[in-house]
Length: 462
Image 1 (cartoon, helix red, strand yellow):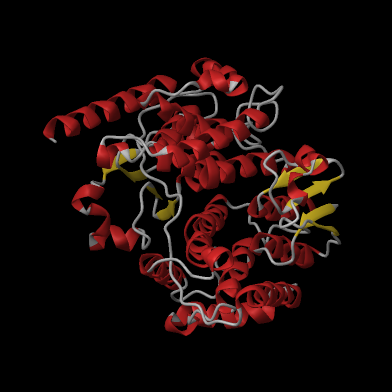
Image 2: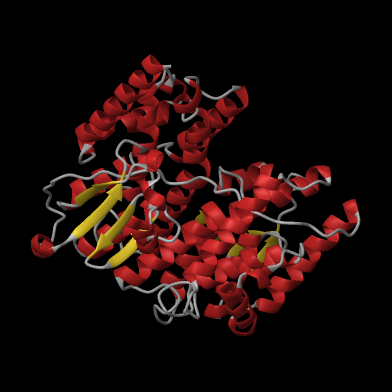
């Protein structure tokens, strides 16, 4: 296995620790992003998104650290302890991985990355958001030794990689006693901790060489966040005979991509969910009864016979794992196929959906789309998507999967605006095929129309 990396990167350190836990040897290939190694044709051929870490396992290429971590466990783990097969435990692990990417690590990036460019950290608001994300993590760890599933998993490894990055910038973790307790233990029990710390010291040395030793003060940016969720009655060959016995409440506010992704997944599985409307404008998500269900107080949130999970991508995978047919093409058992799907889901959250939210969502506040910089990032995300779809009918392999569903929900949001999809011929071809193969496609478009109608009413009031 060839591992393209930098020892300083949190994602790279996550993969190194997971490999250590599995007893795997990685053929490490240093990539200097400062020298532009990631833009060389030979690397772009391996990873058209030209990001690190990237793993090449006997010709199979996968990127996004959390997708790599799960792939390694599923392909080479002697058991499922690091990434449980039980759907509920697995959903908790996935939720924490998405929390790490979209909230905790993103908060670090928004506050601390400016230090490397300008010598100054982010704003006081950014710092406050870091504190908020640590408060969430502290709540998750109340009475728990591990961050998910009551056992040491890849979620602990990924999050300890992130939390340790805060430590070298002198963030006061002791203010969060549950996190401090967990972190002290994680240093002792996480395989590869010494190499993780060595990479961090290298990162700190690089910063101090550029800007001089400094104490930094921290906080969070909520990052690319899920919005909403909506689901109806459905029917499909994917469904188990036991579905009539399900009792699932879905807390949501209809219309946004996260909502529509779950809507289409449920359609594919023949699930009926009890929709419970959460009006975030009125602060329903902050009411004690909802915070008790989801301490991060985000929607969509699913409660399945007492089991709670949030983050839409974690929800769709959970639904397929729990209620889909064995080895469903929507999220198959094969580790390589799953790794591709997971990479696309992380791409959606961290790149495509994030770009969409910055370009399209300002309409709801100002009546106008975002500026030129936001449009450039939106187009860049579509260019990457177009590359992924070169010679492919589906986003992750040869079959329709939850990656297609989730990204269709994101891409179809362009129906709200004027956007020339013809500039991206592979995306356009894939998108046109959606109405033929995507369960719940008509409902997806209807939800967008309702959102447009609400937007028009808001404009009339202004």
